[in-house]
Length: 486
Image (tube, rainbow, N blue to C red; front, side, top):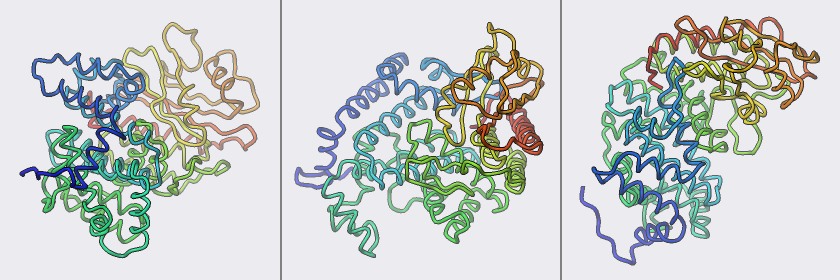
C-alpha cells in the first residue's frame, strides 16, 4: 500500500505534526527510543529493559501485563523486565511497553467522556480479538490483542487534545444523522481512522494497527479479527440481551466456526477479563464502562460492583458456575476461568468484595492477583503475605494443607491467624472466608470474600459456593498444564 504524500497545509499532516511537537512530545521521544532499539538488530535486549526501567510506573505496569500474558498454573511470576523479555520475547514486551506509554499519554491529556468510552471498547475488543486469534491458530495472539487495543489511537489522540474543534465535532456527531466518517470529513477534512493509520506509521507500531483500519478488510484475515473484536465490544454497549449484541455474537461465532451456545459464555466471561486488564493498565474509568452481564456500566467515579448489602444470589451463582464449566469444556484459557471465579465470588455470594491471590512458584508468598467489589483497590494493596520465614499461622496451614478459613466479624482473630489480624487492622472488622484453589496436588491460589461487620454473617451456602468456584478454578488450572493460554 503506497503512503500518501501530504503538503504542509494538509489538515491530517498538520494534526500529526501537532501531536508530535506540542501535545505528546514526551511519549514520542519514548517511542522513538524503543523504535531505535527494535530496528537495530545489534542492540541487546537489555537496551529495551533500560528504557522501560527509566519510568517506575511503566515498569510496574509492564510487569503486571507480562504476568497477565504469561500466567502459569504453578504460580510462577515474572519479577524483572529482563525475565519478561526472555519468556515472552522482545516484540511482545516492546508492544506492551508501547501500549502502556501511549495510554499514559492519553490519560495525561485530560480524559473526556469519549476517550474513556473508546478506551473501554478497545480493551474489550482486544480480549475478544485475542481469543479469536487463539482459536484460529494465529502465530501471535498477543500481537492481535495489542493491535486491537491500539486500533483507535487516532480517535483517542484527537479527543484528548482537540480543544474547540473537538467540541464542534462532538456537537455535530450528537446532532446530525449522517455517517460518522462523513461528519468527520465535513468538520475536520479527514477521517479519524486516517489519523490512526498515520500515527501508527509515525510511531512504528505493528503494521496490523494500520492495516486493520483499511477499507475492504477480509473477515477471515488477521485484520478481520481486530475488526470483529471491536465490533463485538461496540455492540455490547447496547446491552448483552439486545438484538445488536446477539447479532454480533452470531457473527463472532461464525468467524470461529463455533456454535452460538458454545461461544456465548466465553464472550460474557471475556467482558470481565477485559475490565481486569484495563485496571492493570491503570484505566479504572474505562474498566467501569465495559458492559458485564448483570453489572451496570458507569462512567462515574463510583464502584460499579454489587451494591453493598446485596445478599447471596443462588441463581446468579449457578449461572457463573455453569459458565465456568462451559469454559473448561471448551479448554478456554485458565486466566478466563479464574477471572470468572473471582467475579462469581464477588458478585453472587453476598460479599462486599473478593480477592484472587496466587502462591508464588517458590511458595514463599501469597499475593493478590485481582480484586472485585467495593474498596477493591485498597484490598489489593494489603492482600500480600509471606509464607516462608514468617511465623506459622492459619494462612500457612491453608496453603500447606488446603484448609478453609472462616473468621466471624466481631471476634478477634485467633492467635494462630496473625495474617488476618493484620488485614483487619488495615481494613476494619469484617466477616472473612478464605478457601484454597488446588491444582496438581497442591494449593496454587486462594479465593477470599468478606463483608462488613454491620451486615449479617455469611450463610453456609455462601461458603459452599466459594468452595465450588475454587474447585472449578483448580480444574481449569490442571487442564491448562504448565503454560496457560491467557
